[in-house]
Length: 285
DNA sequence: TATATCTCCTGCGGGC
DNA sequence: TGCCCGCAGGAGATAT
Image (cartoon, rainbow, N blue to C red; front, side, top):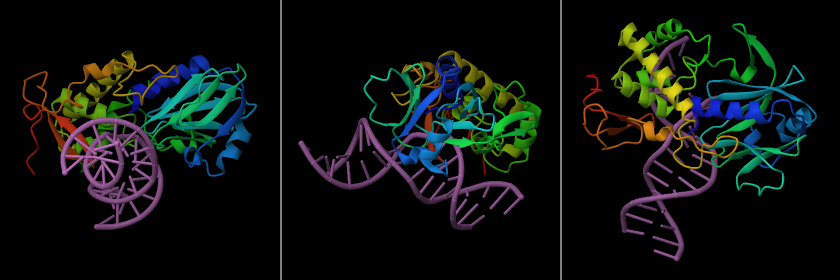
């Protein structure tokens, strides 16, 4: 599932293969993939055809391309299974290729998305806190790899929340880029159970947790991201290998790498949480 | 206003 | 072999 490191790998691929080139045409094959573009696929296609891509940017799990038209940004969210592939035009079309953009090089930028949770949309850019962002991304907090990330401010925001700390980590308006996998990994590293109330954790504990978030994401980025199957790949269709380094996520009943206790899986927010019963004791409520 | 839950979607694997 | 069901989960909508 693409979280911040995976999206950053894709952004770098777009910077290498798409920035500087002109979008000659766009074909939308599945309307759900442009459902967040209220004027529809034809409008999206008409508005970016002929524009030159100037940059590939990211905040959290949101990705966007800017063009030589300063009023337009193409916002891309990969959802759970989205891929941005750069392919030769004569390569066989992927089964779930829902949007195809042809570049002036003759190559195609394809949006492939099995579960259709992701999509493309055009948005104007606005100035937020000194940074130019697409409107649809304006409410998203800075992520832990952002040079202007402010841990003190995030800890203050977390201590104002009477919610489970894992829920707060997943709240993209508090800190962005964290999904289920890296939330579990950071909590394991910090020895904190995800159901502890954020407001009741000490400032040092929360600073330590954010430091672990930054560490695990940096390591995952270095490894090219986490892949469990073919659903996450870079623009060349290659998988990352950080899955081998995971200590908690997906390791139910396997021994904790610290203490040997079997990793437990629990239901949380209609999804799975993995933790060590000994290193991360459940809070008493 | 803050917090919690539901919904969207498809492919895979397990059970029968 | 084929059918059914549960599971995976990001983010916006809806409910409490």
